Length: 404
Ligand SMILES: [Zn+2]
Image 1 (cartoon, rainbow, N blue to C red):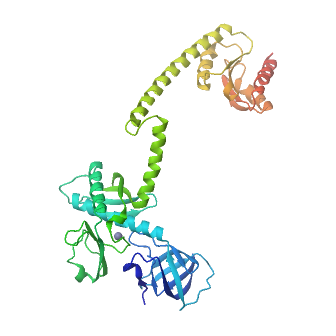
Image 2: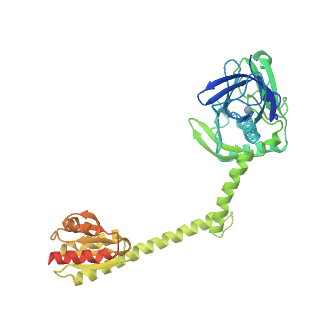
Image 3: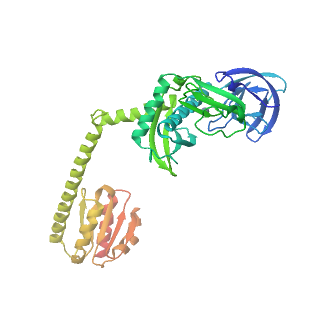
């Protein structure tokens, strides 16, 4: 005997007393079967209800091919007995969120169908957003769904919500009974058909077969917000959310916008303009820094060139970068008759240059590790990085002594 689905006649039942008919082992916990239930089993793009059976936690609910609904509890020990009455309760917040989202998806899909002849070919109810895939196949009036069309659909969908149109579920025993009811998608089942109709059946805002749970008026949907549209496998994927989920997302995004406008001392209308001005200023400043660094590098290079001797010499730098110092060193290397040290103070890095004699790479390999330095290189140039500033001078002293 199949489980009686109480949610089909009253989606607002939050708790009821039922009879436990079966207890079975399940790999996730224990599988409970009841004579009737308010738990919606997973299906139709909607996740299942969670909640409690007696004091046990229901984590999964599904229907088998026999029409029995299985409630999986997370606990592995169950003190309940079959043929006894027990209290069951669903997580109402999750259920209502699902009802809002499911119904919002109906309304939006109905509008894309009515306005643009778009057919909903896919639906996904994710945690952060929902998507519908709208196909324009065989439609000669529209070749694309663009953002303006989405905004138009969004307004019309929300108007249906504001008008608080009724949401009715019409049930039919078989295809023959249901076939004349106006629906936006052909019926796929032969029996036990539920058609969810938003608005009047004579001129519905949406009408489609669905086994999910929906509120009984469109106003409870709250509001419908489209986030973006993008082409996907020859169709158009619409990202959106509904009700409380959409409101929470608005809160999150508005918080980011507020931080941005505060940061740029701007309002919503001019924050992008201020960001562009800031970017222009940054670009100008970056160009200027580049030119100044090049100028300083060339001054430093000519100063060093004037003071070069046959003895090792060291120069320390705070402003020029390692990359800029490498250019200075390479430009000088042909004129060198001993080792040249260019020290990059901010990173405790010593760059060594020579004309190949002495071998800079060997000097680093043989001596840097004495002071915890790391690095390497080749004959004409090498580098060593030290953990402490004071090791810089002692390393240079050591090399000078070594070369005498
Ligand atoms: Zn539905």
